[in-house]
Amino acid sequence: MVRDHLFLAVYISRPISALYALAASAVGALSAGYFGINTEDISLGLFGFNTILTAIVFSGGEKNDGLWVLLGSIITIFVNIIFVEMPFFSIIGGVFTFSFVVGTWITLAIQQGWSRINK
Image (cartoon, rainbow, N blue to C red; front, side, top):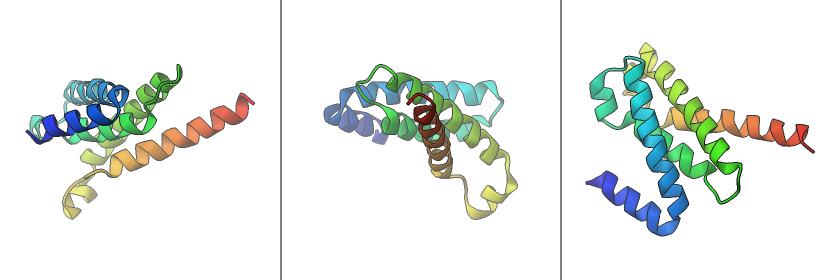
């Protein structure tokens, strides 16, 4: 129910962000399943929510925004998989949205490097 409200709120605010977020959520959940992540962790939305946040950050109306959404989502998925497997995060209660933060930082760094190269 909360996920439905989140999607609706984002859609009302910015439809393109909601569509990118929906696709990123599906890719996140499917990727986690493919890499053998515990079904319970996937069902909790851990992989979908972090990729949703990443997709919203990089979404926009420009042609190359889809590339940044895809790259950021993939990076966030892999960061999330790595963090979920680390025992440190289970001690502190879980990964939460830290993989979104790290995935976004990495993607922003790549984006800045790319813009410097293409000047």
